[in-house]
Length: 254
Image: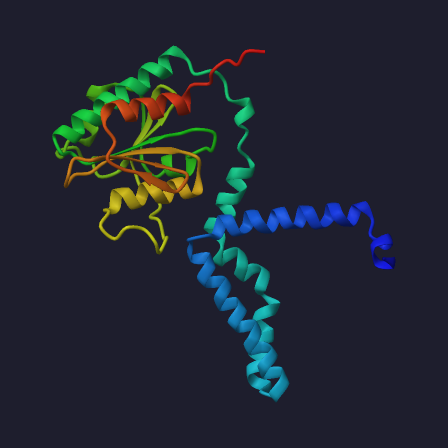
């Protein structure tokens, strides 16, 4: 009872905040290479205690030297996870404006182009930017400033186009870049049968809040990557409904 009386409300708040942070951290690294890295660090920590206890001085010196640089090592090792966490923290969905009529028309053009590409079994990777900026991926592609239309998307992904293998990045109702290269997912539990386009779509959505529409060159199937998860076997109606729901901010009654 004496211990309970010494607990301040600040201590309870402190524990609560730390618990939330640890929980969010575990969610971020779940299913990523960071899990294996943390296990490796745990093994290294056990080795450090063991070497100190039995007097392995050389081994202990090497491990202690590593711990001196642990902060830099963690930043290097967990760079993708840190970038993803900071990007999610910077999201401000409450500032999102109402989707304009032009943007809704662009979504319809994306749907029509995706279905046309799927019917012809032409592979495609269409990235729709949301709150997180995709500037770093746009910079390595071919800059464009074109209105989103079915015809332009079909011409970009046509097999004879020099930029058909990369991704198209769309911001609002404009195609801002094509031929962009996206990060490949490193998740160990990803279906081994999916191709590079699907892995690239998953990789980008693991780091940003972008929506990626994917057309398989082999099967003509339509998929969508959102939040590091892959929705497959989409038809025209389902694709339209998902995009409309995600990019339309509806007014709520008071």
